[in-house]
Amino acid sequence: MANLTTRFFGLELKSPVIAASSSMTGNLEQIKKIAKAGAGAVVLKSIFEEEIYHQLQEELSLRSEMHSDPEYLDYFDYVIKDETLKKYVQLVAAAKKTVDIPVIASINCISSGDWTLFAKKLEDAGADALELNLFVMPSDAGKSSECNEQFYFQTIKKVKEKVNIPVAIKISHYFSNLARISGELSETGIAGISLFNRFITPDIDIDTQKVVSTNVLSQANEYLLPLRWTGILSGQVKCDLAATTGIHSAETAIKFLLAGASAVQVASVLYTEGVEAITTMNKGIAEWMDKNNYQKIDDFKGSLSMANAGNAGAFERVQFMKYFGGKEF
Ligand SMILES: Cc1cc2nc3c(=O)[nH]c(=O)nc-3n(C[C@H](O)[C@H](O)[C@H](O)COP(=O)(O)O)c2cc1C
Image 1: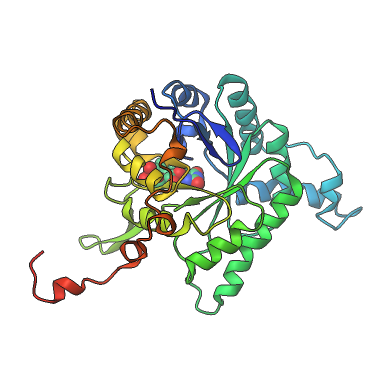
Image 2 (image 1 turned 180 degrees about the vertical axis):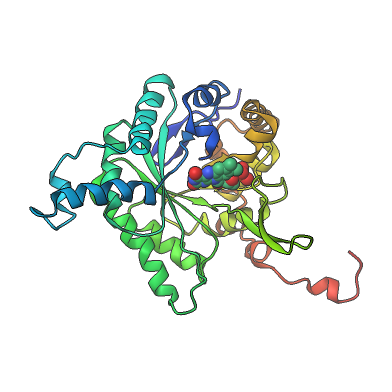
């Protein structure tokens, strides 16, 4: 029988299928079901930087007469008063006590501010690793790409100074040179990169003539963009890769492992098919491995990556040259 063990975020996982951060992973009952269904790990619903800031600002204003430096809180074991933060720390601790799979805390960040102090509280609560969901929408034409990129490096540095557990990042594809930045980020000592964060995308309702949000859940064909980049990056970066977006089946998960991912993160399929989708994916991966005489994930992981298969053309080709040549498609 195939062995589904894999290493990701510096952790040993019994399956490469991870429950991605979502409202499903924000309560203990669901987390128990996810673990029972066979997930390799669970990434908890993110706490947002703004939520953390709120408390820290209050804390700092209380102490401002004595200490104006926010780093002062580093030396002061402040008590969490804010209910949202308290509940999040409690969720980490309760999940750790209840399930036997790694529990990964998650923070959504848009700046490298003083909120990073809170990361330590998550480590103290027992989190096995921390995933930072980092994003700057490069929509400000007045900001250079270097300036946007600095946020990623500064945030990782500040968080890594606070904690000893593995720190991984979840990024989007909105970079002008994704291969270079991913390589440089992987050299900061992070344990992994999750490709790619998925966003609610704007649409326009022509009846109301308003901009509306759409596509909360992914479609099964959305995996192609992260698949291309997993194949391109897996031989180039100095940390593990996990894939996320559009992974709804064992077949798609296997493609990512072949492209070089160590794990896949799933969210939408848990909403559409229930947590049992994880069991089905594990079964499908194991059956495919047995059929192909693979005993463990490492036997085939990355075998079709750009670096290993010598197929740069397949991953880099983007134009429809042959179709413009008059052929049918
Ligand atoms: C309802 C919902 C809530 C989500 N909340 C978060 C979140 O708090 N933090 C985060 O990093 N990603 C969040 N995500 C993104 C997922 O973790 C995942 O990366 C993304 O949905 C792509 O995977 P999928 O195609 O399997 O849904 C959320 C996704 C959904 C559908």
